[in-house]
Length: 291
Image (cartoon, rainbow, N blue to C red; front, side, top):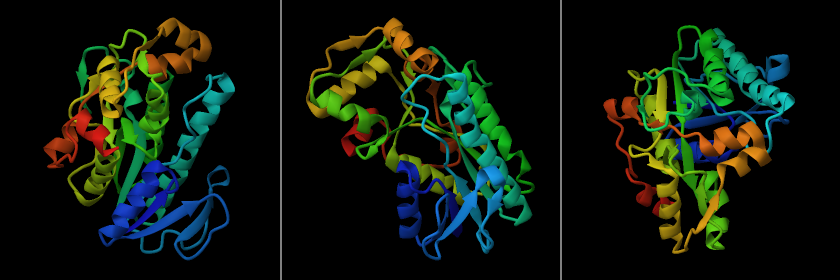
């Protein structure tokens, strides 16, 4: 396949590009800066412009773009920036997919779609939850509506575990200094996924024509924050004695602290497993060992 990726320079995009090339596919990249070489094409989502020839011979588009949700408080302006960085580019790509007759659009989303699920297990059939992240994900996914006859897959990604970045990359130096600890009451669920399985799952949905609509990209066994904290401590052979009160997180970070740290999703990858995807890392300990 010839796959065009937006957001190819990030943690997931870089690993996905390497995997696709290793599997014998061709990778093209959409970039905001000046293009460098034949494998790149410039685009500017606010103006709706994409360089001529960017979609020539393209079989599938993967959209992984969007500004980082964290750290920092979510002011009204910041919320608008986070929304604009996701919805507007997705609308532009969806229209281009339709105009150029591309067969597949894989579009990023997140398990934040489900809001705070408490103890309830949720799969892709669950409704949207409450909160800014849930509303953002709904708008993000809705922006794919202009993709015409393309098969659209909305990948609701969990917490990606990798030593190169993401949640574990951030936590690792803190735990190494024995500064790790649970957040709030520790009962909120953390739907983790190993980077290897994140990439493997994206390749899976690209190449399996029967898969469409929302797909949870999470490991099969989500754990609570308290369990996650203990597992990271075991992986790094460090104690994790600390506790950050929920009231402190909300006081310092506001709504961002509440939804990013205290909300949890007990999300499971029902569509992936039904479609035959085989996880390399089915347990948190295995994923952390790989990271």
